[in-house]
Amino acid sequence: QSALTQPASVSASPGQSITISCTGTSSDVGGYNYVSWYQRHPGKAPKLIIYDVTNRPSGVSNRFSGSKSGNTASLTISGLQAEDEAVYYCTSYAINSRVFFGGGTTLTVL
Amino acid sequence: QVHLVESGGGVVQPGGSLRLSCVGTGFRFSTYGMHWLRQAPGKGLEWVAVIWYDATNKHYGDSVKGRFTISRDNSNNIVYLQMNSLGAEDTAVYYCARDEGEGRTVYYFDSWGQGTLVTVSS
Image (cartoon, rainbow over all chains, first blue to last red; front, side, top):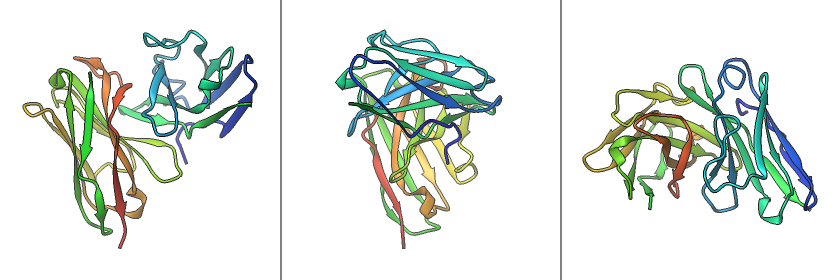
């Protein structure tokens, strides 16, 4: 069982928006602004798409955005495209210098 | 271009040991923290350990603390993961990944290796 809780799957049609939640505790998500999100396509390495809760690395589409409220972080993808179909993982820095992962959310673009 | 290549995986009996290696090229290895992560069959990703760029700090995930040891050789651009007292729950593909921060550790992963499979089985 993963330390952070994500929905197992989400689906939507092209052009729509989706939000993936990532719930932790006050010792990880709620206690630090060090949440990140990764996109992973089959057979590929995970790609960092959000860091420090809201920041996008250079080259990542502005259709991806992050936020946090209390112990729950969220990833929103707007204007869904077929290429967004992937597994999304959240991570959080946690007390005692650890990193926790969410279990991953499979996004299906219908 | 950053390139990370893991090696050392294989089949090991329960209670046994294995040492994984990861060679990093295409960047100044000695200025980046390095992580090990893993993914068990059918499961999600799990962070295993980190070593700071200068090896002054090392931290471990709860499931491996006391059994695994991370180390690095900055002269040869290698990070290691010594795994002892292995159990079936350690069966996974193990990845090394570079920390996104240079000269500091930020606990984000911006480059990953292709992974090496460790199977713990009798």
